[in-house]
Length: 133
Image (cartoon, rainbow, N blue to C red):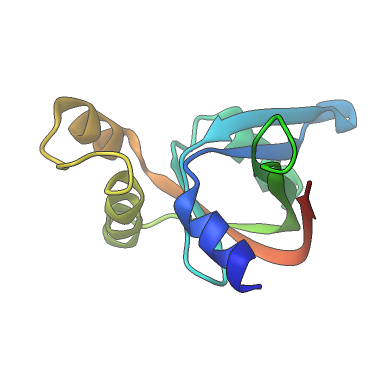
């Protein structure tokens, strides 16, 4: 568990899968934050992933690295997504997420992303699958 949790805290890209119309999958690479219990993703309520989660909150996500053994490691997470909507809480979590990717939140891109973020996807994991080769 310790290696898995450290890995999830250190990595930068999570691929989120949601279920869309006609049970088609929608997969999006996203920035995220792992708290040790839950995963958080900042986004906008206009996105396809939010539209899908509103209809079906079951999600999967994958975080992995490596192309050659013995440096291949990955984690698949299956769980339920909750939507956090409410300006102050959303902005607090969004700042924590963006701080992982920008040296300062005064950066023009960071400001634009923070302004555009009006929703947080909170993933409550039900199952972890880890692979290592």
